[in-house]
Image (cartoon, rainbow over all chains, first blue to last red; front, side, top):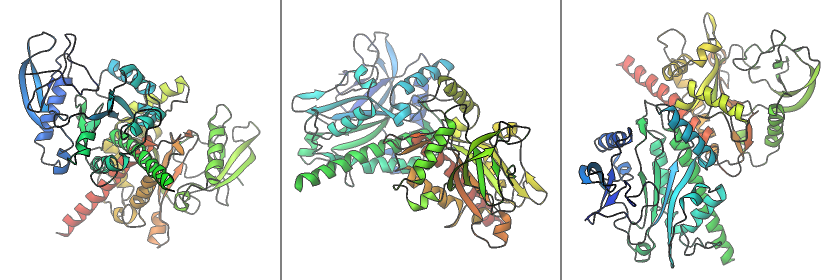
Length: 284
Length: 284
């Protein structure tokens, strides 16, 4: 039985007769291959190339959803059978995952794209935090006692640098009100299994790899309070998703992704440092 | 006695009745404060702020020309007395310096600039290596037996990634022909006093500092074969120049400069690694 993903925070949704991703009960995520442009082909090409690329270190594969090939499925927009990518459903092991979808890079366009596409991206990049911060939050849901806090698309699009800082604090708090307590910051962002350590691993790879340039690709942060409180691991994860705009690196590092990733790392580090500072103050 | 700098490789020159920088015999470089827009004010503001900023580590100051204030001088375009920045003349200690001027960052514009300025930069960035590589060479001179190789502005503007690689090899070679020998690569790029080590120091600072964003700023690489052969130090230097477009970092790292710097570091590393590889082959 296929259904609409419960924990999708960004991108097109398979509702109201529209085309969107589906999931099953066995941990698979089905993403429709768009046939109106080259995106579908590009994403499929990337998964084929990446999954068979022997130059990708083992620990880097963990950042990517497992690829299970393609499958023909009845599309959610009623257009009949069409090809879907079959991927790992990252959220399937989690009960109430808090999720941040962060599009990395200060530029989402690329020289190979059409002029219209470049102009659209250029405008969107300037009017969101993409240019100023080197990344933008595309969607999120944060779990708390009263359910999920999931701000609307328009609100997210207008996030400022301070909103981003606030979201990063709420993500690791027991409350999502105006004064988040950051009580999970140390466990989720810090430590050798924490998100910061994972992001630094990713950074090290991006300082070296010259095979792929990831335009408009997202880092997904996932934190499951339930798993954390029950002592289950992993309770926090970092995954990369959305490879419809991956282009050949041509022997050059992906300086756009790397710069944005470093900026995001600095934001997370600051939230972690501030939370430690405030814990110290509480104790004094 | 003021004169036109002999070793200027990019930017406006004080010739043919135009306004440009001047030098004296005491190691000073005089840069006219442009009064037609905010550039002059912005560069002066930066030098004042930077030179008195106690949060700048000592080893980072070494990357910047020493600032000696301002002075009124008779302008080279005949417009009478005008204010000049008085800076350290980086080349004054060197006899025949090879110089590369590399504008760092995949974007030279900034949100605070005028629309015309943004559009001009956007076009120039796309049609040079700025977008693709995250930096572009703006000018160069390389010393060899027959004098300086100093390609014209148009040629430099059309450099491809392969041209950049070739220039980085010629910079550390005894010849500038089609097969540069890279015989100085190990001494100039490698080692604990080499250019690569300096660039990595700079990178570490840029991963952390959130005070300044350096748009359209250049890294200047300087290598003096004469000094090297006579055992004088430093025979190679890394300096940052051109701060007319430095803007407030507002608590965010300069991800644009950092990304470009990392890409440039990778290029230099590759030339160094290749030169070691070929030396090994020669020995076998």
